[in-house]
Structures are given as C-alpha cells and as structure tokens.
Image (tube, rainbow, N blue to C red; front, side, top):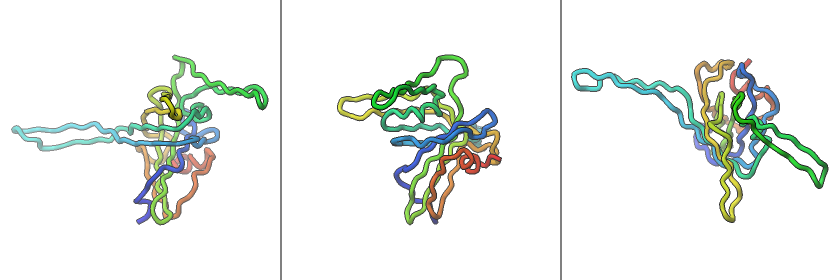
Length: 193
C-alpha cells in the first residue's frame, strides 16, 4: 500500500469557488498551516419492533472541518472569509488592511486540499469539496506565544463535481506530488469539468 501511513500536514491550500462550484482565482497555501480536521457527520435512526432494535440507518450528510494556522494570513482570509484586503504605501511604509462587512451575502464557498506525506515517499491528499466557515477566524493571543488563527466550518457536496453527493475525498499517491496553485488543478482534483 501507499499513502496509508500519513503524518504532519505539509500543505493546506484553499481556492475560491463560484456559485456553480467551479474554482476561481489563484489558490493560496496557508502561510503556517497547523491543523486540519475532518469530522464526517451523519443522520441516524433506529427501527424497533417488539422491544428490539431491528434496523439501523446512518446517512452521511456533510463533514465538519476545523483548521488552524500560525500568524495572520490576509491572503487566506480573503478566500475563506470573503474579507476585503487592500494594500497601500511603499516600502518601508506599506500597510495592508482587511475587513468584512456584517450582514449582506455572508461568507463565501471555497475548496480546500491538504497534503500529508506518508511512508516510502507516498502521500495522502485530503480534499474538502465545498466549504463554508461557521464564522470569521478567531485570533488566540497568549502571553509569550505566537498568534494562532483558528476556525471551524462545514464541507458539503459540490454541485459541479462528478463526485456526486460527496463532501470530502481521500486520494493516496504512490509518489508524492505537489498541489499546483491553479484553479484548473483544483477543478481537476475535485472532478469539475
């Protein structure tokens, strides 16, 4: 087997999506990716008869996600939170500003791929099909520690994908390959034509 003994995440890349689910713009690698968790969710039910459980039902509905990164990465926030990012000034007096208006359209959809190296030069790619955050990223500031940005959200099926009704995919690579920072690579990875 290959890609079946993954460890440390080495790449976490996000790309904006349009209303049809196709990827747009240039994907961005999280500057200091720390964590990416995928927690599949399901609706369950039991059928009972004569005092016994006779049938069980489990239907996958979506996946909860969480991600964390070190520092403040405004390029990522622009994609995952729909923040408006502006830059002004010249070196050494440049300034970047980011803000998100309350109300209105809410937060945008995006796709996300994480790459985990595995034993023997292989890799595992984890793809979250169509993500939306639950809120803006939180900033955790503690005495004598670097700032951490953390956020949770959900991944659902992508209506433009050939992977019908799939909230996330796992791809094992025999030879570890890079995540190409183009929207076309994202569309191919997620089966969007």
